[in-house]
Amino acid sequence: MKHALITGVTGQDGSYLAEFLLKKGYKVYGLRRRTSTPNFENVEHIKNEIEWIDGDLTDLASLITAIEISQPDEVYNLAAQSFVATSWPQPIATGQITAMGVTNMLEAVRIVKPSAKFYQASSSEMFGKVVETPQKETTPFYPRSPYGVAKVYGHWITLNYRESFNMFACSGILFNHESPRRGLEFVTRKVTDGVAKIKLGLENELRLGNLDAKRDWGFAGDYVKAMWLMLQQESPEDYVISTGETHTVQELVEISFERVGLNWKDYVVLDEKFVRPAEVDLLLGDCSKAKKELGWELEVSFKELVHMMVDEDLSRLSKQYENKVK
Ligand code: NDP
Ligand code: GDR
Image 1 (cartoon, protein in one colour):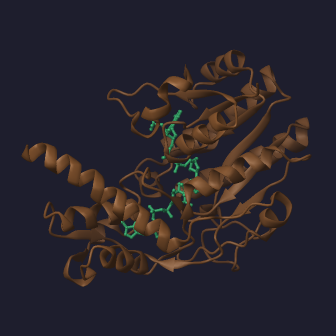
Image 2 (tube, rainbow, N blue to C red):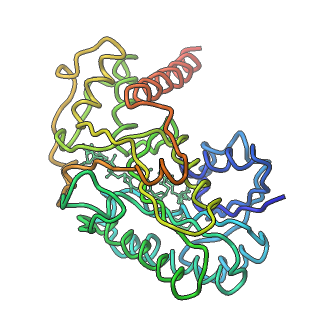
């Protein structure tokens, strides 16, 4: 039985990846940090199948212990301060977790079990300001947020450990991927949750920032398969994972409101509070390397993804509302 250690397992991707690896027969260890209120929503259904280890990416000792306990064949480093907007008010914490946390994790692997394969969750935010489109593995980085800068560090330190210590360490440069398990502050979920609340009469407006930003949005369930495929290759390499399509935030809004038969113009309010100090205007990925070498294919289209998220938010909120009325 193969052992996998996942950091960030309570997050969106961690929960899909844990499900995927459990189905493949892996023993899955999940690193969790202590929180003052429970945050097991994404993994509630598989909570008892995961071996839990307490730890924090900023605490090297805890990571060394985690590798000692789990004796992993594969390590998936998904933990991060992952919300771009928060990286301006919390630049230092973002650097400590999202950048230096990667070195901590790599050191723990190098010290305890250097033969383990290592996956780093790199991001299309590293491309930042548009240098070329579509963006591919060789496109130069120009990050536009403390988060993007931290991810560039994490990316290069992973490459450096591969070259310095001959470790099987690789980075997936993933473009935006979403799901009904997406955090409520990210724009897709904010919109689908907001639309469902408006439809049910629980809210009467949706406040947003820049509607012109363009993103290459895919489904998280498809993307975690690519992470696993990268660690099944003969040699470690970095891959872009994307849909190859880009859409504006406004298109996302239009499709979401259309799904429930409403006109977005009647409800969306532009609010400066959600405009970022520096924006990434356009993300569009070229994942031909992953398609060719990993045989990776996506299954869910942008429209299907938005419909899935609106439908799930509507159904969840309707049940909560019915229970309250009862
Ligand atoms: P989430 O924000 O949903 O999950 C982040 C996870 O990291 C949570 O489990 C969180 O735990 C954990 N975490 C945060 N800080 C620490 C810490 N100091 N020590 C240990 N665990 C910590 O992110 P996603 O699932 O969306 O993304 C997974 C990874 O992929 C992240 O690294 C993200 O930056 C990256 N990425 C994501 C993309 C996307 O579109 N989703 C695209 C490209 C890259 P807790 O629940 O306690 O907060
Ligand atoms: P992003 O995702 O920054 O691309 O990072 P997010 O959904 O937060 O923003 C996408 C775009 O929407 C614009 N926007 C708004 N965003 C939010 N959150 N709230 C709003 O009200 C709003 N209005 C407009 C943003 O300005 C931006 O242009 C995500 C994260 O998952 C990262 O961890 C990951 O690395 C990248 O995707 C790839």
